[in-house]
Image 1: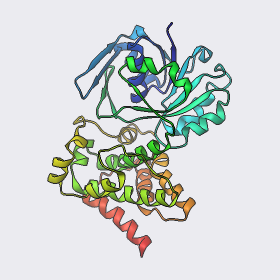
Image 2: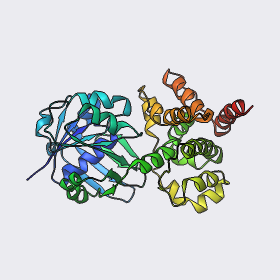
Image 3: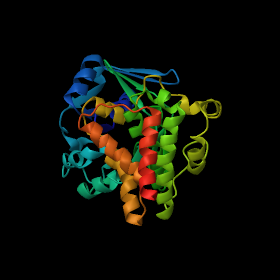
Image 4: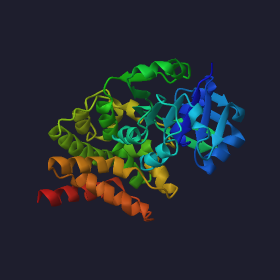
Amino acid sequence: MSQRVLVLGAGSIGVFIGGHLAAAGMEVIFVGRQRVLDDIAEHGLCLTDLDGGATEVSADRFGLALEPDEPELADLVLITVKSADTAEAARAVAGRLRPGTPVVSLQNGIGNASLIREILPTTIVLAGMVMFNVVHRGRGRFHRASEGGVAIQDDPVVDRFADRFRAAGLPLRRHRDLRPVQWAKLLLNLNNPINALSGRPLREELAERDYRRCLALAQAEALAVMNTARIRPAQLTPVPPELMVHLLRVPDGVFRRVFGRVLAIDPLARSSMADDLALGRRTEIAWLCGEIVRLGEMVGQPTPVNRRLTELIRIAESGDGRRFTGSRLLAELTGAASAVQG
């Protein structure tokens, strides 16, 4: 019997995940913006990845809607909207889902699942995390541009759909406590504002030492406040987060030799934050660097680097199109840190 999946947020991640589930035989309904829905309605889906895989899904294999249609028929709900839109997405199906329906947040940030749980108390809300980047190339083409899988908070309800994800080529990595994974992914996502401000593709940005030094500053500050708050992030890279901070600072040639896999990214891939700025949309800076700033306030520890990154992105959101070289951005961040220390 086919399972119906309601994807709230037909962006790059939502369409890539939902498209693969549709190809594996699930009944998928995408809810999203008109621009994306029109694209995939006309062209269907072509889902590709770094490993050379390609999956074609014709438009008659999935449904499209601007608003949730008959959510009471859903066997699974995936919430993939930007964090700022979480409450709105959850309220759109509040009181309309069957009790016990699994709802999975596949979003950046730490607290989205808790917010959804407050709005949808009769459902089973699970935190999830997508570890890879997806590029929307237009004409129904969505490309997985970096390595990684899908992590999920473990619960018996996952047994209902785990086999379908595996068949779709998206095996779920189940964690008794997903919070260490969420904090670790947040550390990696602190590169999002740096990439957005650079105006460069991810691979080019990460290949330049000054940009990596900016990321090292942001991560070191984040790890310091996490340590004070007794938060232990998981290890998602070949080396622990604390060591990664030091390795980000090594010369470019050494970094390429030791961490060539880190640069195994599609040449055109950019962070989702860079895409948001390009499209004039709100970014998720409040759920990335802002999360570190709030944690620092809770434990009484200054976070000038992440605060300055937040300020610079807010300026960019207002329409300021300046792009920062690595040295200029590094000066901005070191200056902010020095002002607090002084």
